[in-house]
View 1 (tube, one colour):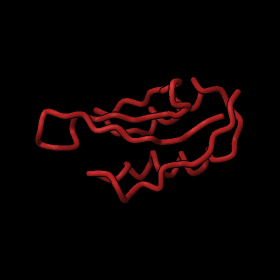
View 2: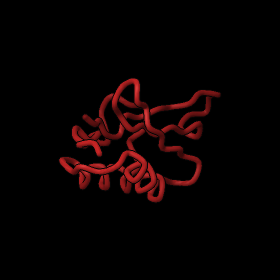
View 3: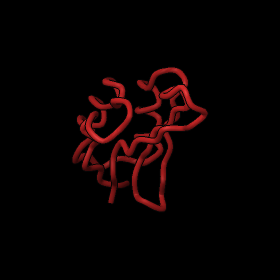
View 4: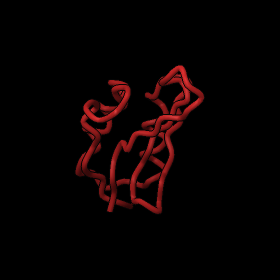
Length: 84
């Protein structure tokens, strides 16, 4: 069980806003103590098709990736939530 905090605000500093369903759920999870796998699955369930939610244990955070964000052959990664 980890405590989740510092949800991504959903804008500013990224080439595309965090999808609203993901941003909203991350805000709801702020301050909760849950299993990492549960949080990843909840976020994946609301993420748009083509987006992948992952645990990034080396940085203690949950991330979301998409290769559909730009016209270039690049992947964009958001930090969705941190945990401790």
